[in-house]
Image (cartoon, rainbow over all chains, first blue to last red; front, side, top):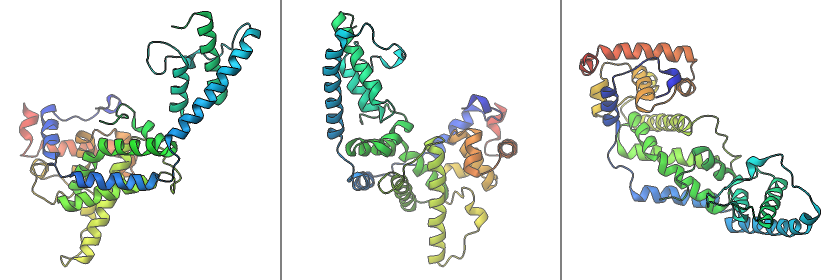
Length: 133
Length: 187
């Protein structure tokens, strides 16, 4: 129920009875499910495979790590403007390069390459300082 | 169990819009698994029999699929997905009934009857709601069975929020007087 518009109510038992009465039997067969799944496969057949996208993300991260290793010795401190991005994205219990990959995979373009690069550099910096948690 | 079961509808729609092939297929299948029972329920309220309800189900998810590229331009989800699915399923059901009416010999279907659930079979829901107008049945089911917000109901029925409130109030008042459910109000 939506709290903000709880203006009219029916007794809970009546609502439960209505819900019960509205439930259809098992109408949707495995054949129907397969038919819809086939439609989806046909529809998305022209899309590039996920593997390529992940591979591209790997290449990007690898390049960033190399860059970070080269640049870090000459840098006192990395950017601190958006700490919210530097999180344990994959819930592994530590912030590492896998989090950068996970973020790249999940963001669907919402996180820029520059932000991913910065994240990767931060991860490398933490690893070098022994601060990674 | 899909690996995307924990993703929200909006995230799944995003994957269908822009994800890679495997992700898009998995996302769409998750959306289908999540909402197919709802769509079949909506369809049954209008068409009243299993065969036609299954047709409505397929048409509804085909429509949704067609929104994603290619060839669609992508689906922008401004409201709950169920709000969209209700409208699409209802329109598909009405189209199907109209086609059946033209092809059959039972004469035209009353458009007023098509504007809200007709409950053509003798289900329990019919018994509970007998005595309400089709419009009252629809607003009661949208609000209390489907759990749509008042704003979403306004979008579905294409009426202002004030009209939703007024119609809902009248429908609840009408329900209080129904012999089939009167006892629930007196408990």
